[in-house]
Length: 221
Image (cartoon, rainbow, N blue to C red; front, side, top):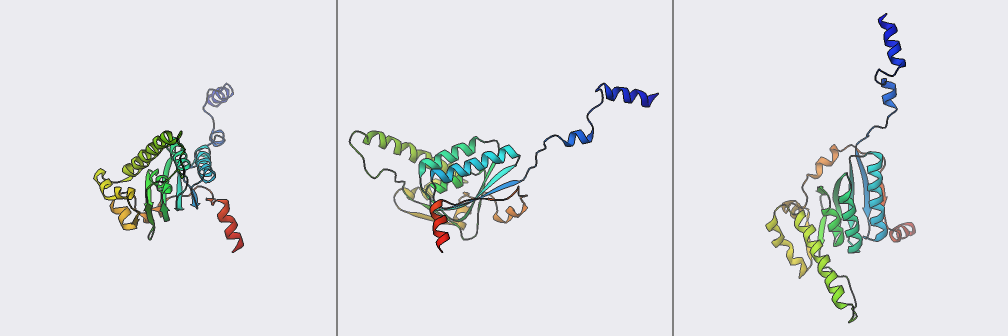
């Protein structure tokens, strides 16, 4: 009698879905999607990093890890990438793997978790954007320069462990400044130990972002 009642309830949809039915539902896979970024900051390279991060959200990764080796490049492209990455519902992890300079430092500072590899360095210098200025556009361009410098200084300030550390690096506006891995850790720009990267569970294959001009050079060697 009891068995018959259960069978009837199942037919009427009164019993919860079976484990097999639950298995058909999409599940969050989790893990860390890795992007290896080598080369200059350009519109193309930043768009590729952003696209990969957006894909990571769609397929269910827990975080995206950007391994950086870049001397910098276009500040507007870096601003675009940083702002998009910070708008995504996914943890951003950045790693200074080699030389990280200029606008690429802003990308590094976008990480919620930031790591520095042994022997890596950060290169800071005064931002340069416009080689020539016409009289009619000079004021507007100067205002844009102020906005960019303010944004960049804000990224650096947020990246430091202590606010008063900014006084130690603000000389970059007057002369070039190189920070080694020990400096980066001491100042709090890296906030996680490099050795703990081994604990992360990777999600799928790594994505390599290498600008086209470097690919051409490598293919000739």
